[in-house]
Image 1 (cartoon, protein in one colour):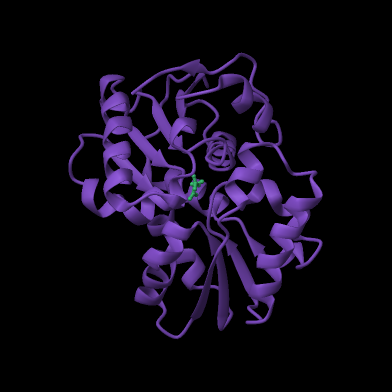
Image 2: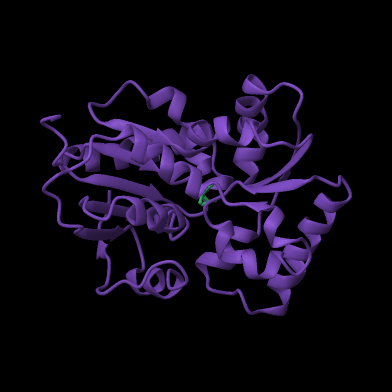
Length: 260
Ligand code: DGL
C-alpha cells in the first residue's frame, strides 16, 4: 500500500463550478477524505492572465501542501489550461488537470466535429483543440467562449431573463457551426444544462466530469481507512457559496473563510 494513500484529496476552482467534478469523484470514491477550496474572491478565473492564474494556483497548492494532501484535483478547466504545465513538477502530491485527463476519451468519440464552450482564457489557450488533436488530428474542434456564464452561476441568476438571453446567444453562435457534440469546457457550465438544453439536445452535451472522475479513480492510490469526510473553504462570502452550490452539493455547514 502507498504510505501516503490515507491522506486527503483536495479540489479547487474559482467557486462552485468544481463541485460538478467533486460530486462525481465522491460517487466513485465515497471513502476518501476531501478538502475543497472555492476561490470566490478571484472569480472569474477565465478573465485573468496566465501570470495571475499561476500566482493564484501556487498559493492554493501551498495551502494544500500544508495540509499534507495526497492529490490536488484541478476541478477547473481554466487553471488546467493556463497553469498545469508550469506547476506540474513543483509539488510532492499528484496534480490532476481536467482537460489533459479527459482528452483521451473525448478524442475517441465517433464524431467528426466537436464544439467546446469554455471561459475566454481556456478558449484563447486552445487547450481543448490542442490536447484532442494531439491524439486525433482529424477531429474538427470549434471553440467558443462564454464570458457571462460563470457569473450567472456564482451570482445565482439562473432564473433571470437576461441570463437566458446571454446563454441562448452563445448556443446559437455555436449552432451556426453545426457540431455533433458540445463539451461543457468549464466546470460551472453543468449548472446551466437546464437552460442550454432548451436550444440544443441534452444528449449531445458532454460534461467531462464523469470521464475525469473515472480517470482519477483508476490512477489514485485508494484509502482503505478513509471516512468520507469533507471540509470546504472559500476565499470570500461563504453564504453565497452555500446558496449557489445547491444544485450539486448540499452543504451541511458554512464553508470556512480563508485568506491566502
Ligand atoms: N470553473 C472554472 C473552469 O472550469 C473557472 C471559471 C472562472 O472562474 O472563470 O474554467
